[in-house]
Each structure stands twice: as structure tokens, then as C-alpha cells.
Image (cartoon, rainbow, N blue to C red; front, side, top):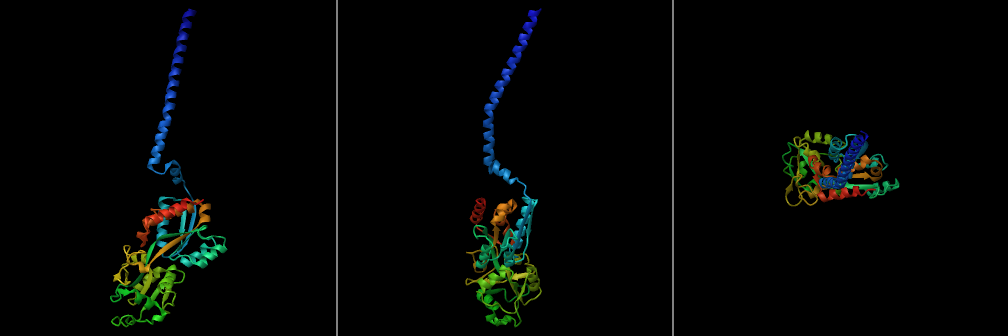
Length: 348
């Protein structure tokens, strides 16, 4: 009896040991094959994009604010980029875009009140000196980005059927105090002997400075020019007066073609209408083309992740490159945006 029990126990122990050995072999086989599976997953991740580390970085949820002010011309584009970023990228980041004007924007940016400063003209040497006086080195602590190209547009009333085409010289001369132009007939005798109402943006705007410095060559503007802070006001003034004429960025004309018409400008080879196909530094409307900018406080970008993240979005192909045309700007060549993206990636 005892012998029989011993045999049964021995058989049971044998079965247990056999099962354990089988499990151990299976575990060894699985452990040997897992690295292959893992490598396949890594390869798959690498082939589909930027890898697991970048994917995690892209998925980081940011918060806080990004403060921008400056150019009223650049405002529609930057506001569109900000809206797109908050909707599609970082809904917890508040991007606040103002439009005080290029010069007014720099007055806030230089003492550190804003993260970005939009401008429809290049920063001045005097402003760079002010930055340095505040302990910031231009090019190191402040980065300059060209966002797109804008075409300075001369606009008239929809019912003006005589001044639809003008030479560059006629436009410059009529806006100069020394031009002695007060009536349309002073430009061409066959035009109406009616007083011209001159309008434009005021001194806060880079558009005024571009027009004064680059177009009028820093000569005095006609004394009767009515200069305004708001572009919407200029649109209304011109749309309600057949004898009115004004200048501003192409984007504001493009969104008000039902109220205004653009003067076709002859730069020497025939009249050219401002369009996204003619605006560019080497295109037919080059004579009135200018770059528009934004300036980044690099110190803030390194201190505040949301500022750097938004900066990368601004110069990405989802940012200015894609949205420029929708806001009346001609986009830059792709390689320029790529160069800006690399500069931001290299920030440390």
C-alpha cells in the first residue's frame, strides 16, 4: 500500500517538473523573439514620422500666454495664425495679438512687454540701439523673421473712372508737398478739376514709414493728407468719396474689393495691378513690394515653452506659408521658412 502511494506521488512530481520545464522553454523562446518585435516597432515609428521622442514632444500640452503687438498690416495674418494654432495645436495657450502699429509695437517690445513685435518695415538702427541699452543683442536675443511679401496698394473710390491707371512718378508727385498737386487736373489736364482728398495710415504704422522713406524718399508729404490710426476708417473714407485716394497694404484692399478699386501702377513697362501673382521682390509689382516682419524675444522663447512652440508654428508650412495668401500676402520661397525653422530648432 505504501509502495503504491509512493509510485503515485513520484508520477505526480514528474508531471509537475515536465510542465515547468515546458513553460521555461516557452519563456526563453519568447524572450529571444521579443527584441525582434520591438525593433520592428521602432522601425515602424521611425518610418512614419519623427520617432517616439518627437511624437511625445508633439503631444505635450502647453499653457500660458503669448503676447504680440505691432503692425496693423501684419495683424490679419498673425491673428489668423494665432487662431489656427489655438484651435489645432494648443488650445490651452492664449495667443493675444494687438495692432498698435509697427513703431508703437516696438515701444512695447524693447522694454520686454511683449514676446513678439510685428512690423511692416524693418527695425531701425535707433530701435536696435534701444534694445542694446536694455541688455538685448539684436540677432542673438532678438530674432528677425520675414513672414511674407506685401504690395503697397493705392486705392480709389469705385466710381472714380479716370485714375484707374497711373505711373509711379504721378503717384509719388501727387503725394509730395513739393508736387503742388491739389486737383486731379493737376496730374492730367483731362481729369476733373476737383480737389483730391489724400488719406493714409498715421505715423504709428510701418506702412506710413515705408511710404515716407522708400516711396517719397523722406520728402514732406502733402499737407492736406488725412492720416488715420485704423485701416477700417481709411476704407470707409475712400469708399464714401469719389475724389479720395489712399495707400495701405494689399490685404486690406483684397478684403474690401466691393468698396474700393486698386490703381494699376506703371513702373515703366505698362500698368500692373497688385495681385498675389504680381507682388514679389522680383515680380512685376516689385516697385511697391515690401517684406513684412515679426521679431521674437529669444530670452522669452527659452524661458516660456509656449512662446518657442508658437514661434515654430508661425514659420512652419502650416503657419505663414499656408495662410499668407488667405490674408493678402505673397508667401516666401519654402527654403526661407525652412531656414527659420532650423534656427529655432537650434536655440538652446
